[in-house]
Image (tube, rainbow, N blue to C red; front, side):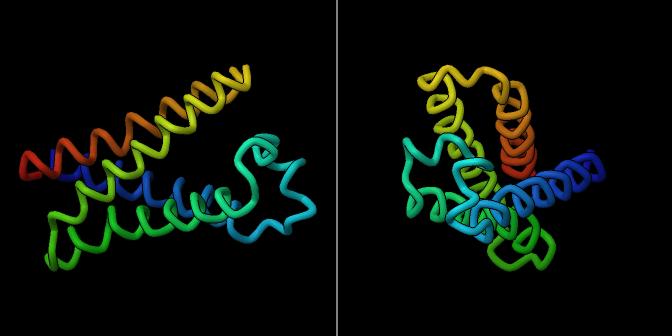
Length: 121
């Protein structure tokens, strides 16, 4: 089980680093084409979400890996899952149903990591 938790943790970190990185580094002029929902959230909120995703990705790996404050790992995973709850709500309100399956995966994976880490794996 421990190996599975590390594999899923690595996948979560990779996915959120990529997603958060895109939100942070995409030029403002290209944001509407890449993230159509930016008109509803605004650029500052989109950038903040990206930064939180990057921090969450780091938090899912580093504390558990180093053994320094390992309780931060499930907290980071819960934070990432909550970001996805917000994303799902936003996409449903905007009737953007095409991304919901991917958002569901991005919700379930960090939730798994949180539960597994809290259980001691």
